[in-house]
Amino acid sequence: LAKKGDQFVELPYAVKGMDVSFSGILSYIEATAAQMLETNEYTPADLCFSLQETVFAMLVEITERAMAHCDKKDVLIVGGVGCNERLQEMMRIMCSERGGRLFATDERYCIDNGAMIAYTGLLAFAHGMITTMEESTFTQRYRTDEVYAVWREKPFPVLNHIENKECPI
Image 1 (cartoon, rainbow, N blue to C red):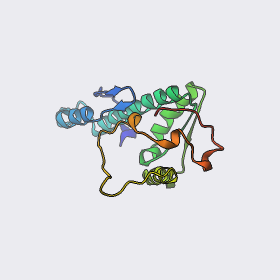
Image 2 (tube, rainbow, N blue to C red):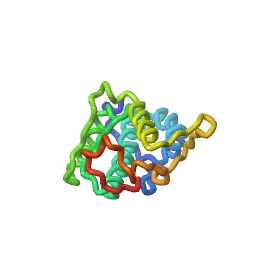
Image 3 (cartoon, helix red, strand yellow):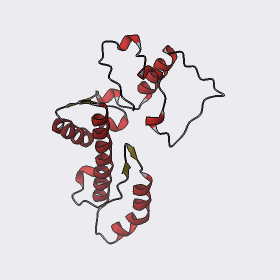
Image 4 (cartoon, one colour):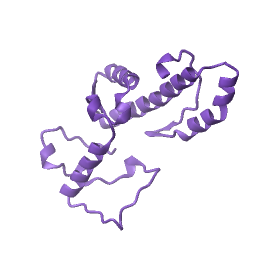
């Protein structure tokens, strides 16, 4: 539906450092969409287009900031949203402007982040990190830059062929 939109609606844009907040944009859409559609000022396609462009711009911004922070040139886009051609296009443009490249996995492997979660578990296990069910928790507003990951200091042997630069995120 977003591909059919041709009018951009300015929406809340909340990026702080490498953190994004989607609550403002969601609240705004929930509060105003019915009125915008009722007046025929915008179509559902326009709202979808605007939502997509705004959210993807936020993701591109924090990705570019992370690349600069870690002195990296390339990006691998994965997960369910990684299938979106518009996000790939926006990321590709940003990477190109930085002299880098975008890699997107085959659509069959972009279903969810299960493989990344499993790989993180493998890294943790390989470094002797074991979390019992009683100790396991989740934090919805987890700051990834505050997560201790031992493998950032001692890389997993299988990864020795990959350049290992210090990156705090």
